Image (cartoon, rainbow, N blue to C red; front, side, top):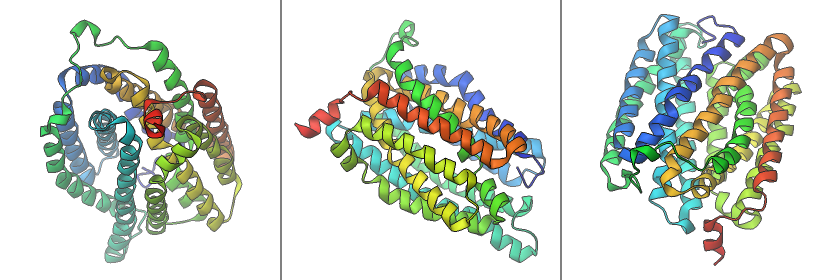
Length: 373
């Protein structure tokens, strides 16, 4: 979007659109998935991702590119929403945290490959065409590879949709589709909402931060992100042992709060190696708590409400991560640079961790009792 000429504040506005779309369709979708099963929603989202990636790889008009990118993000969000209930459904309590951690690690290994391709392909095209690797044409070549990979992934998604494990645990009467444990939902959604705002102010601008502050091109940026993904994939596997030693809820809260001083450091550091180290440590801390947080949510509510909680979490976090966060960050960057935007982001990271510890610091889940028993 920067290559197409959009300013940082307008990029923040466009980044918020998928979150707003999910806000309108997310909860009804989750209620239907809980009742009808996940098959149709897996297949529908997969097909939308394929179509959007194909359009994005050939789109020349800025508006078409933005709409395709938003559709692709929305499709992947729906798939992410359903992954939690699926994993919880096929796992026993004693193995759930480990399963979520392995799933998260595999996702980061995929991210590693994606970062390398996303940075390397534009560089290769630029050398071939003797153009800039930061141009829209060079970057669009990476989207073509993304479209191919999305198509290749579709058969695996179809196979998953055909498996018996995608059927709902309990088929609810239509009148109960939107009846949930409101108190539990609100308690678990509040810290996620605050964390989403903080993360959205930072994560949506990492590539631009590296490009604009340190003058990096897509190749080096992709390499930096790929190394971070490799480290994250390895460290994420230690989440079960961390949970056993310190407890799931305490680990989640402390790791969320740890993002605060790290993002604050990124706001003011002007040395690239130091910035990269801080970026990695923040990424490791926040993604180490991710499988723990996901497992916590799936155990905190009744099984028949898991898809709705997963969607509610994605919607609420998405409002912050893809909506309020980038919108506010882009506005602040235009007025006070990354120093102001990332400083405010750090405050939200700290608040999220403290709120989670205040609400759930004494909670022990069935999986923890099963592991110690």
